[in-house]
Picture (cartoon, rainbow, N blue to C red):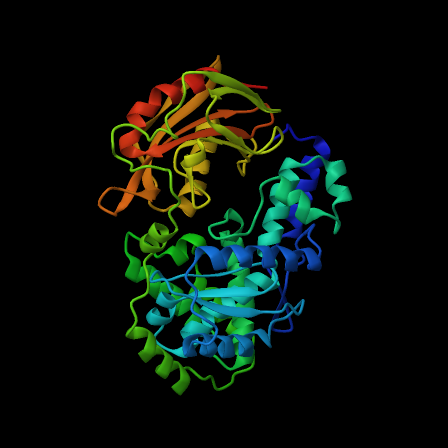
Length: 463
């Protein structure tokens, strides 16, 4: 979060230029060559580390399950036609109701049971899996992490990380690829790339590529105002059906297969199952010591002490309760929270402080703040503003204040997902980027905590 040098800004521009839509070559899509500081070996290691985290956090069907064996067989057919690096692809099924799928760096692909239930034929399921395989081919996770590292590290350090030590440096910056990681949530550009590569993989595997775009369109329409989790992690790039059709038109006509007896047998089996919801999974993983939200007072290990200590960060200074902890260092994004305020790698109580680079470096504070809000909603579609944003002053500096409501990682006393209250405060740095704070608490505990949050904000000074 240091003010970036001209060289670092030039590097960011080069990174942007490297990341482009896949090139068409004789009717074929070739993987893009985006800038990536992770070597193939580090990519594999990052995926292995994340895979260990997934096994602990998500209910996976055992490899011996016939459903998993079917998905593995289908995945192997598709992966055989994946271009680029020959990653050791593996395929897994999550016993979760919500429609979703994701891929980790280096080859692991996960498909929710709800996705198989939602697919009307084998080609639709193959489309989801070909799309995820394409994210692996394009190395989207580590490329996105590289871009984040370029925004946080000096140019001299970046140069020394080329293929050497990028993974360890990423860990020091708090960058990981586990469940819910920001780096597994894809941009619209990445989605378009995965669609186009997935089109060719499906074609070469004998499936009608139109089924991929049709399935994504179908689940979007069925979701209504509450889009499935898949569309949160994989935002619609727009004109998906049209550009997939254009890509298919560049390929030689052939007879496609749409379904199989194996799929119909698997579909019959999964329709008789009752997979867990995301809320039920969260309840099973819930760590102790957080206390029940909505009690009117935070639990003892959550409640802030009356004494404050000062955090001197390279980008700001801030005082915080001395019984809360600082996660991060003076060069990175920071979370300040009580020990019991972090649940399932998500912040339930505390404050997160980070930087944000708007697309337009000349954007006004208002424009940059609303761009940040749009980015936050992409990863959390339930998030919405309460009332209107307000102009405030942060020790003489112009700022914006927005109150938000969304879902908490906690549950209330009735076992339902609790509502979370977020207070977003932004200010512009001299380099045009935003510095922002998000104060977080379950909604009904926010009142008692707000005086502490306001006291922290009064001490906040940008450097």
